[in-house]
Each structure stands twice: as C-alpha cells, then as structure tokens.
Image 1 (tube, rainbow, N blue to C red):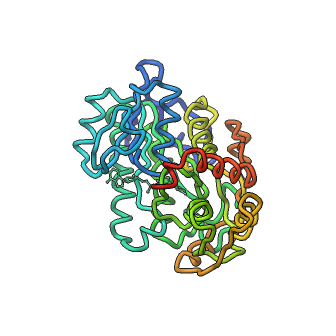
Image 2 (tube, rainbow, N blue to C red):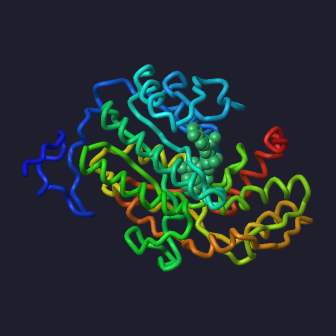
Length: 350
Ligand code: NAD
C-alpha cells in the first residue's frame, strides 16, 4: 500500500519511535509575520502569558480570546470573545487575523473536571483536535498546548518523576492530558505540525483567581493570609507537590516556543519543575512575613487527587534540550507575592 505523506515525513519506515530524531517542520516559519491567537486568555495562566507575549511580539500581534468577556488588563489589547468548541469560528478567526501561532490554554481543570467528567473529556479533547486540525490545514507555524503533572498517576514514581515513566492518570483531566500529549506527538510525526508542550506543575500567581485545580490552595493561602490572617487548607499539612511561580511558567512557555525547532526533542510534553513544597512549609514561610498567620487543615476530595500525583519532578530533559532554568523558589515567590499584593491592593479585592 502506498501512503502519501505531507512534506516533513517521507515514508512510514521513517516514522520514528519515541526517541525520534528531529525532522524539519512542514511549514516555513520565516515566511509570515508572527500573529498569535491565545485561547483561554482570561484564565490564571492566560492573562499573564498574554502580557508576556505582548512584550515580545507587540500588543497588536496578540489576539487574546476566551469564552468570557475581556476582563482587567486584557481590555487593553486585541480581544475576541469566542467558544473554542465552534470549529468554524476558530478557522474563521485564524484566517481573518492571519494567525501564525496558537497557544491553546482553554480546559476544564482537575477538580472541576471531576464534577463533570464527560464535559471535561469533550472540551479538553475536541478543542485540542480542532486546534491541531487548524494547524495542519491552515499551515500554522507553531502550536502551544499545556499538559500537566496530572498526566501521571498512582503508580508513577513519586520522587523526581522521570520524563519517560509509567503514566496512569486517575482523573478525567489527567486522562485528557495524557491523550492530548499523544495527539500532539502524532500531529508532529504524521503531519510535521510544530506543536510544543510542557507538563506544568501547580501554578501560583496572584493576578487572576485560580480555575479549579488541586493546587489552588497555594494561591488562596496568600489572599487569606493578607485579608484574614488565617487559612483552612483543603490538603493535609504534609502533602508535597511540585509547584511553579507564574513568572517562571510564563518564562518556560516562551523559552520553549522561542527555542529552535531542532532543540525541541520531546514532542509529547516536557517535564518542567521549579520547587516542591507542602502546605505546612508555605504557612511557615508566610509566617516569617505575617507572624500572626495561622493555618488549619480540612482535607477534601482533592486530597486523593494530590496523593496520586508526583511530589517532585525531574526536568533535566528541558534543562539540557533548550536551557530551562527557573528563577523562583518558595522564599522568593512568597516575598514577591506578598509585596505585590500589598502594593497593588486591587488584586486583593478580586
Ligand atoms: P483557567 O481555568 O484559569 O483558565 C482557562 C480559561 O479557559 C478560562 O478563562 C475559561 O473561561 C476558558 N475557557 C473555558 N472553556 C472555553 C471555551 N469553550 N472556549 C474558550 N475559552 C474557554 O486555567 P489555567 O490555570 O489558566 O490553565 C491554563 C492551562 O494550563 C490549562 O490547559 C491547564 O490544564 C494547564 N495547567 C494549569 C495548571 C495550573 O496550576 N493552573 C497546571 C497544569 C496545567
């Protein structure tokens, strides 16, 4: 049987195994001016990533989009209110704005996904496939799609979780992330779509409320510490999880997307890490700044999710392949968040 391949994959015998060598992406990224569509821009990561991209490509070249109306700083740049489940509208937006790159962040997260697993599967999977199809058909230069430590599961090695290891996610969110990683690799191998991905740990920022994840406590705790000087945590005191400050998450994402394609050797998703801590450690760090802060613990259904995830991450592949290096640890992050929340109290009100 003769199989016709797109430019970038010459024949089936060359379709590489998981340690495949790089081959040239099908679409020449030098031909068009960079125009980015960011889907899910209204979320915790999206609003900060939009601002990071403004600095690199210019505000006018970043189309932020979300199913919600534009809020806060996003009102200052180009914005499209749009539901990513509308495939035709996605294609139309790409053509109308001459988009060359997509960052697809819209998803139902781990805790919210467990409340409606069928919808989590549909939203997270179909939207990714729409984006990958658009990238292939409309010849986009690059696609970014985030995975998560939720793609790992209870039998994954918990300490220093390797890049390649057992992946048996126990949440529907994690299942969509693992399947999504494989779809990304498939589109890269089969069609030469330059799609890149990171397995984020828990992301901690203070500018936008978190979106229903299991690591949200590490955001809420700072708000409650400043407002009420106490916090009731939904995870147990000694629950270690890998975490990352939002500034580092934005940097990692942009570093990966700016790396020369031949350096991006992992086409499922890269392990990425910065720090690992438990609620008791965050509380102790906050107490250095707010001595009368106190914490209590009342674990809920999210404890079981947290217990199924890695405690720390081996991100040596990201460090070796494209030079990943984090800036923030727990002490630096705590100091930065408390300082910023005190000087910019508008974030405390939201
Ligand atoms: P979030 O929930 O804060 O933001 C998601 C955004 O997507 C929301 O603004 C929402 O309105 C939008 N959205 C939902 N449905 C949509 C639709 N049909 N069409 C258009 N927009 C829609 O999530 P986040 O924390 O910013 O996470 C962004 C991405 O990063 C997600 O893919 C998530 O899985 C991944 N991630 C996040 C974390 C974390 O700790 N926040 C960790 C690992 C991975």
